[in-house]
Length: 428
Ligand code: CA
Image 1 (cartoon, rainbow, N blue to C red):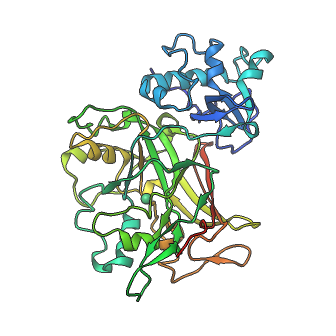
Image 2 (cartoon, protein in one colour):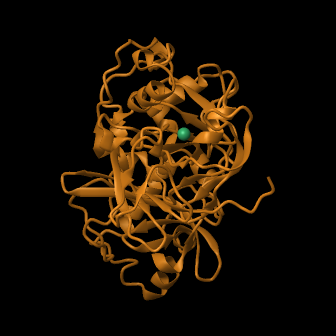
Image 3 (cartoon, rainbow, N blue to C red):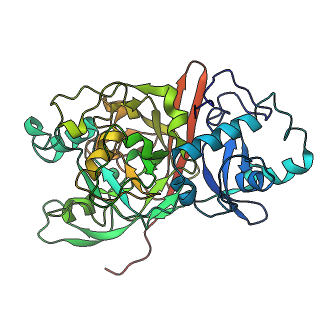
């Protein structure tokens, strides 16, 4: 089935603000709680949340093989399991229903009452039940910056880095939707020059500017996903703030890698933007200096031009943009990550989430973490009201945004916005 939602000239009969992240070309998927406290799967056009469960019950998806309750669920996992053909058929149909030339729903006030909500009367939920979460480390600039700070500027990249999309298995229990506040974590750290570790609130809480992709069921035990098919198993992408406690991380990570410094919270944006919606924004990924093994080899445009930005908003203050980066800087592509992840036969399931790793650009104003922006706390990052930051302070809100733009179409991810609350009271 051809994909036919991308036409830049397509218009909808719904009112959509110019430069909305959610024009009719986007059609993302999410899960929300309605004003009647009913949980449903939905999409969004402009500032309207659209109840797909209601649309389905009223017969608007006739002819598409869907189970009756596919949208009456509190996660997208089953729908994602239905596979790319079904996602595409549903998006094509939504695109038709809301097309300016289609009067069927447009002129049916009774139906509109149960299908359409304004965004301010729904509460967004976590869109998928994330079974497994893997985080990669795929930005060369980020890996080089961290290697320069912590090891040796001459040998900033580890010897494996240009051969392998390096990653680790994270923890999914603390992945939370945008809007959920988090606590400054407690933990052990080893202050500089100290002889023994101390216990208390982390002093170096940081964000990580990342994106993540959500997979469908892809393979059986022992069977790799070929790189040429990998993208067919990617449902879509979200913005991802992988909160990190740098001081806890530094003390605990030897020899097995990230642990409590990384699993106290990871925040994602609420709407999953599909790969079909991102198709017009394909770009080439950075040239790979060392030829990868055949199972990681790709040709053509394998990355996406997604503008990313982070702002910090202090308590009672205005947000200040502190960095701008782009998904296209990623050295390893999502297809390479997925092919590598499964080359040993590891199973990938519907609703699994893979983080990109911090996405830093080539210049200091495009770095994807406070660790890099403040260069380990040696520089201050100014905010617009005269304050400055080296890391994230109590009651700061961190806001990640992302969008694509080309030929007059603007497709965005909305935001992932998280407030850092003070640590819970503790005993020393
Ligand atoms: Ca990370």
